[in-house]
Image (tube, rainbow, N blue to C red):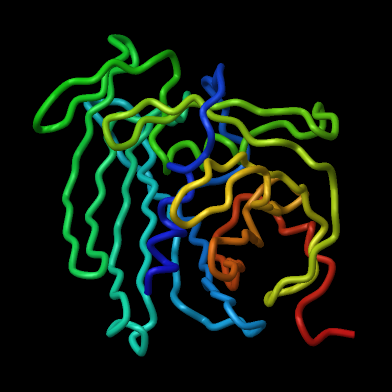
Length: 264
């Protein structure tokens, strides 16, 4: 369904700013982690389960160096395939020490549109190379998947409300210096359970789908894992909600979980 396409392209709509997160030390995840999400669309006051997404982490080696493979997959629910069928796979291979990417690939099948892409990054030369061309990047350039995992390692204890946290990523031949705003701590009840959470908001560019501004809200667990458990955003018609519905092999105990759905 079209709403799943939107979910997998959220980061490309963050408004450009300056600076960037660089060389984050990984303290939040380990190989074997899997996080499962349901994606819901609301247009008339009723949320419809439109699709599913999964993020996984594996160990690997790249040219003799230890690496992580981050994989994000998404698919529309079968009963909505006739409206807008989605079968997407994004993959990022990164250095384990810096979390900066060596290679980014994506295989897109969205409503009959197909695209396969592979990008090689050189952090030393500040370039991103596809099969067709080479593009200039900047210090500490991420792809859209590695950026998510780097952001999970932000030390929010040092943040004040309304602080802006910057990172840069490369997508579709463009370099995007971007930021999101720290909104403080919160308690959020999702379809999985009740969580103590850290609340953040990216700045979106107004387009054909999003209204623009800081209207998207993301809640990540207020523990050492920092996994997103809820994303909410209005769009031009209706709104989207993404909920974490399952996980495997987290690096740390999910200490932010106050209680599961159905518990008193």
